[in-house]
Amino acid sequence: MPNLPEPTKVVQLPDGTYVYADHLPTIHQPVQPQIVHQHIHQAPPDRTVQRIAFGSGVGAGAVAAGVYFGPLLVGALTAIAANLAILAFLAVALTWGVVSVVRSVGGAEGAAAARSVRRSRRRR
Image 1: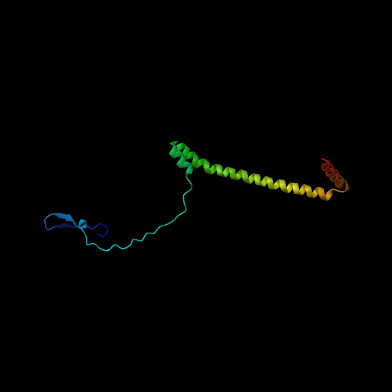
Image 2: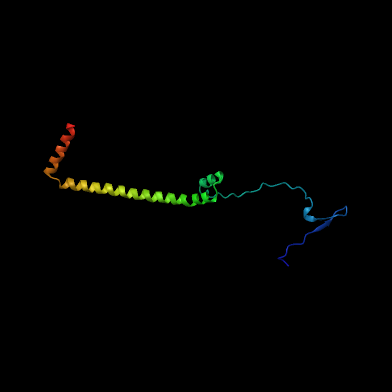
């Protein structure tokens, strides 16, 4: 049957003992250089928190907290930074709009008020 392994070969040595044929010494043949295929993949994520927790003997709770809350904290800080950036942009846009409207609407009274503010600043 082709799917069964080949039976092991037993050989009788000249001294009368029996040995398996695959354990006999073979004639030395020159060794060819072995080709190694190395696959380089992306490095795993940084596990500094886990290493610190294992090194200090804290245990699995600290490791789980570092694994779970680390990315959660990064996500939360990113969301906060994005919100602050949007708010800053809105503040700049609204200020620019108000200043533009005031400059375009302001007439002689606005110019006189600006002159009086400038004079009061110079006196100090």
